[in-house]
Length: 254
Image 1 (cartoon, rainbow, N blue to C red):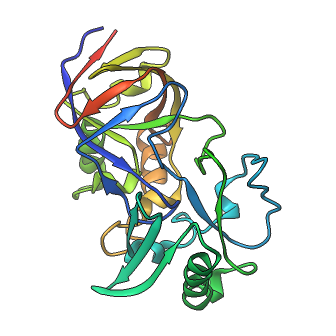
Image 2 (cartoon, rainbow, N blue to C red; image 1 turned 180 degrees about the vertical axis):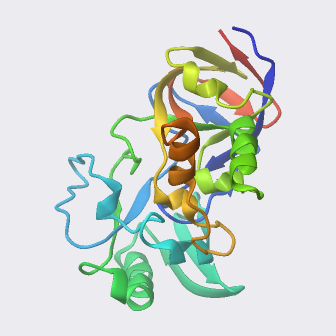
Image 3 (cartoon, rainbow, N blue to C red; image 1 turned 135 degrees about the vertical axis):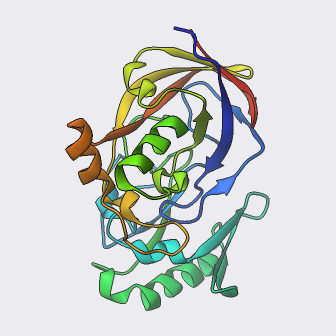
């Protein structure tokens, strides 16, 4: 199959549940996520997570949009050089901390303890593991959204749907609606990298949350189920050949 398409946008999510960060380009490594993607999470109650020997746990162990939609009202930025997380709300800085230091983590944890007290099952804790990614799936993957499918979903709900509701890494333009769901085991050539599509993405209630207003204003999984008989939108892919990719790159299906 040969469908001409292009890479419309690239995003990473340094802290699970917080602000997407656009990237003009990125270098992918074999068997890895985007660099720093979901490198940190905010633990929601004790989970027994061991950073020296991380074991995958479901997203319900962390603060996340499926249950904690108020996260979408925050605007966070992660600086790679200093490992500093800055959080703003309504234009004002509300928290800042170097996630390499105990003091920095404590500042971020205190913010979430105060602002999300009624949603916590225990003291919030900043978690990370060397090279670990707090993905929704146990494997290290890159998540992909087909903008053609988002356009089809807009027809179903009768209004615009912000593609960032799906919190994908790569957004691809010019594929037919739902074409990605039939591409399992297909190889994508993007820039210098090659990715194998391995799994369809089952959508959860996080997609119901507007990423700008934080309002839970749609029922996307239910809408998909009613119209298509499933709640899948988007796919996961494994990097099988590393290399640089950039916004605007052609996307070819082998």
